[in-house]
Each structure stands twice: as C-alpha cells, then as structure tokens.
Image (cartoon, rainbow, N blue to C red; front, side, top):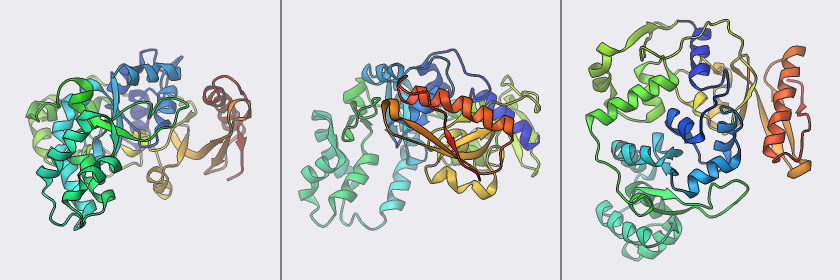
Length: 360
C-alpha cells in the first residue's frame, strides 16, 4: 500500500473524509479517546469529525460523567469515555509507572510508591484537589522531595480523573482531580489478555492499516508482539512502501486513493497525526516536529499543509493560517470556506470572518 492509499484509509476511519452523523460519545469511543492536555482542543477534534457538533454535547458528557479526562496512552492526558477508563486504565498502569520513573529519575529519594499512592488516594477520594494540594498535604512524610515531583508521581500512581469545570467549553479552572472510583463508582478493571486484544483491534479499526511499531507508538504499551501474534489469524496484512508489514481488521474501509479529501482544521496533538511511529501517511518528515510541538495543523488533500491559530473572542474572533507550501487558488478557496465555518464554531456563531492566510 502506498502512502496515498494509507492516507485515505486514515481519513475515512477518522471521519475526516466525511463528517459522521453519530453522537459525540460514539466518536470518542471510536477514536479510543482524544488527546486533551489542552482542555478545549477536543472540541475542535470532534467538530472536525461530526455533523452538527455543538460544545454542549461534550460538556454534557463530562458533567454526566459519561466522559472523563485521564492519563492514559503514552502517559498523556486523554478524553475518553467512562467505559474506556474503567476497561483500559489497568492495562496501561505498568507503562504509566515505567514512564513516570523515567521522567522523575532520582527525584523521589526514599519515597515508597505504595505508601505515597495509599496516602494520596485517601485525600483525592475525599474531595477533588489539585496535584499540588495533595502533594503538600502528604508531603511531610518526604520533606526531601519537591511537592511538584510528588504531584507528578501521584498523577500516575493513583488512577485519577480531572473533574469539571476543567475542560468545559469557555471555562477555565484549576486541574482538580479525584479518584476514578470516587467519580465513577467503581475502580478500573484489572488488566487481561482480552483487554489488550480489544485495544489492538480498536486501534486498527480507527487508525489502520498499521505496523506493530505504530500501535506501540500510539499506546506506549510494550508486549504487543505477543498480542498481535494471537490476533494474526483473524487480521489481513499488507506491506507499505518501506516493506513494513501492516496489520488490519478485515472489515474496515479502504477507499480509492484518488478520492478527494476535504480541508480539515485539526486541534493540537490530534492523534490522527500523533498516532503512528511512521507518520509519513499524513505529514512530511520535515514537518514532523509540528505534531509534538502542539501546533494546530491544517489538512489539505489529506496531508498536513499548514498550521493555524485563533485569537480574540466573540465577534472579534479570527483564525490565521500559515501554509507550509504554496496553495493553489482552489485550495485557498477551500481553506477559506472551512475556516469561516471554524470561526463560526469557535465564536459560538458570533463571527464568520474569513481566515487570514499568509504566504509560505
């Protein structure tokens, strides 16, 4: 399969070829979550994929506890369904702890992880708190450790959710956390081989065809070759232009590589770009750094062709586009049309200004 065929498969499965008419929760689960360290970015991610999406659709999910913001894939904050955090958090725990230890290194001298987790769980379960507040509450036991580092460790050692109003549209609030069990009424399920298999199949359905290295890069999980080996008899396989073996579920769409792809504005850290080890199907190697720097990217003909920013509020809200290459007149017109729709969405209908598009 060539890069263009893989690109069109990605766009179709991400609902970036045509917006989906389903509900926001359905899309969140189909994507196995949206990266969400920037609290409002998932709103743009859902708007780009759903017809008639309104911010209240996601606000309602968060307020009704049907969706939550948690540390999960790659030890990054994701917006996922309540069902998924219960099913997946236990599966990700070993990876989360390994990455936490790698990040903090020797900055936790003398800290017993179980003791820290037990102490933190009691405080978080009593009422939503920031990581810093809980670190300072329990930190007298480890005066040699900076509260910031204790808080970072607590974010991993205790299964936590960030609670509203953090993450609600047009609202800013401290990142207060409580335990998954306190918020959802039950703890995450323990990991099972079946849970790992379901995760791989869901990834392929939303991101495939893909190599085992892509699944690992997206999830952060190790031990995947064994999982893939168990699933292999039921998967279809391809090879990409580099000779890598690509895996796929048998019933996922593979559109004609020549099908037109509409302009799409994606939020920062969108997994359509970040969800691979080899991202060449959607972004050029020279621009790969944009995807990890938090740039909001613009898709033209299905590939990253620019970045965009927004500024102002209400009727003064504007969108600015910086192309990475020279756009044709037809492409600029499409960028403008979709940019007007984006401005209207971001301003809650108060502005319908055309985006300012600079020259590359």
